[in-house]
Image 1: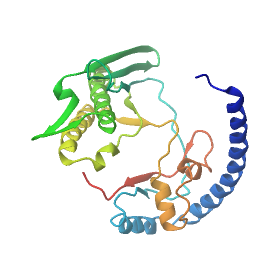
Image 2: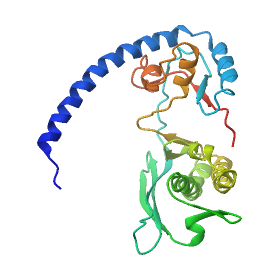
Image 3: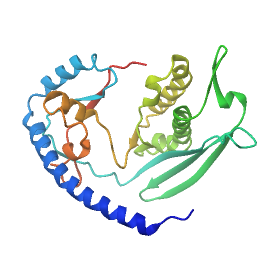
Image 4: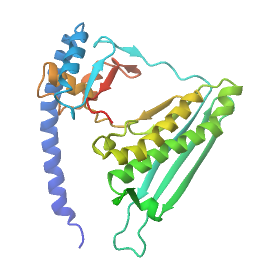
Length: 279
């Protein structure tokens, strides 16, 4: 059936009007929360104590403790003239339950970039098809759990980091050791594997050691790892704000409250995410 663009156009106009009105209300609310947030500058120890007391009673809620004064604003350091990086970003094709064969595919996008007087770039992909029994299920005794949904996302995330470590060893190791070139490894999204927080122990035992081993190997090579989020929806700082003084602050975008006083090229106060849930 074709798409009725006339009917859809009316709904788009209605959405635009609603978003405009909501935006004005949200802007006023953000300003109120930000003022309250900055008013607690100098009371960072109180926030840390409150978070530590509350997180045990709220094991599934995320909080963040400030590392420095809440009104901190710093200029971001300029990039060095010469540096190199590797990055990975994976995607997947899920199982087709109506297909001839049960399988899924993970495609790993890989990037190596060197900036400076000898710029170099290499971009390639590594597709892997999973179809064997051990690829399709996690087993514990007689139990079998299919690798799909969040678990397939987690397998892709682990493979992203393992590939990143291999690229760091192959591409960044010589430059870092022989030329003392600044290097970094980048991964898309968060470095915290939250889907495993509610997973069964044997599922955690399957994925976490592989992930942590790759992180340790990167650390041993002297290659820092960072993740980047183009539109952050993190809630850790907002969790602390709603706990301390604004119970209705949680739905607000964290970046709008923390960064509203920052100009381009500046960063706000550093926070450390904490959670009572242990794996």
